[in-house]
Image 1 (cartoon, chains in turn purple, red):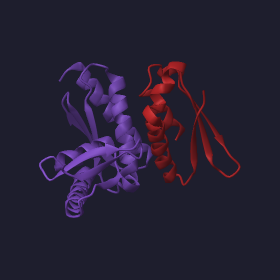
Image 2 (cartoon, rainbow over the protein chains, first blue to last red):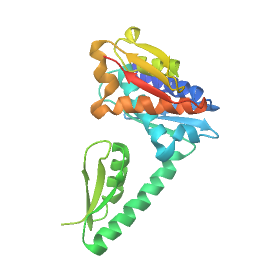
Image 3 (cartoon, rainbow over the protein chains, first blue to last red):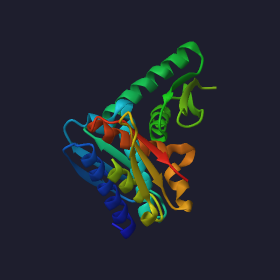
Length: 156
Length: 77
C-alpha cells in the first residue's frame, strides 16, 4: 500500500469511529481497499441511526469520508469511497436492481420513459450498470442534485 | 455535537487550525452551532450544490437525535 492509500484509509477509519461514537453506537470499524475503491464498514448491531431514513445518514457519512480521503492525500487517481453497515449496501443494491427491472419492464411494455426516484451518483451508476446488458432499454440522468435521477426509456 | 462538527470539518479543510465552532442555545432548546473556517476553505465545506454542507448537517442532526435535541448548523462567513 502506498503512503497515500494508507493516509486515506486512516482518515476514513478515524472519521467513522468518531461518528459511531458521537451517535452513541457500539460498533467496530473495518477499512479495506486499494487505490481505486476504499470501503469502510461498521460492524455492530442497532445501526439504524447510522443508516438513517432512506439511507440518508450513511450516504452523508460516505460523502464526508470521501472528502476526508481526498483531503488526506491529493495524489491521483482519487479513490471511490464506500461506507457500509450491517449489510446495508447489499440490501440497497438488491432493492435498486428490483426497481430498475420493474422500470425497464414498464418502459418496454408501455413504450415510454420511466423516471426512478432521486439517487446519489454511486447508486445511479449501479442501476445504469445493472441495465446496461439489456438491449431493449437505455438509461440517462435528469435533473439537478439532490433531485438528480435516472430515467429508463425504451431503446431507440 | 460541537466536537463532532469541529472534527468533521477539520478533516475536510486545508487549514484545520482556523476552524471554529461556537455553540448557542435558543429559548426553545434548539442548539445552534456557528461554524467558521479560513476564507479559502468555505468552498470545501459547502461543496458542489451545497452537498458537503448538507452532509455535515445530516450527520450532526443524527448525533443530536441521541441527545433528543434539535440542532442547527450555521455556516458564518
